[in-house]
Length: 159
Image 1 (cartoon, rainbow, N blue to C red):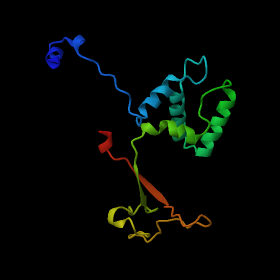
Image 2: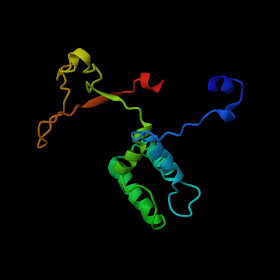
Image 3: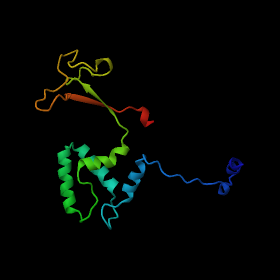
Image 4: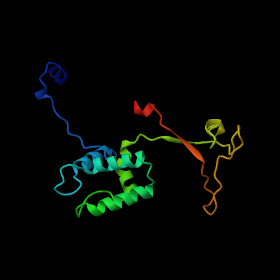
């Protein structure tokens, strides 16, 4: 009966169900950050906007994480006391993480000959040029680090 009333345009008699937000949904944290001003009495900027803009600057100008941190340290020093700007790259990245859809890192030959992917994932040298996939690392344990990585942004989750 409620469905028939709703189809006839009489929505006022349909019950409204209030649900608690999913505790795992970080979207609500983003909304909270977008509502929180950068400092008291600031009307132009909110936490999320500033972090997104500084991330864009970092990307456009190829700043390292250390460069980002130094820039933020300087910026925080000129902002009013009690500002809410995140203090470093790690903290800012934590705010932005819910916006990303993720990607897959694939090791590749430094000469762009091949990808170490699927059946070639276990290889350590390029089949075409013979160059090693991994850098020689000293004093860092047995962690392998590829010369080059391809970041694959799958389109399926973005649809």
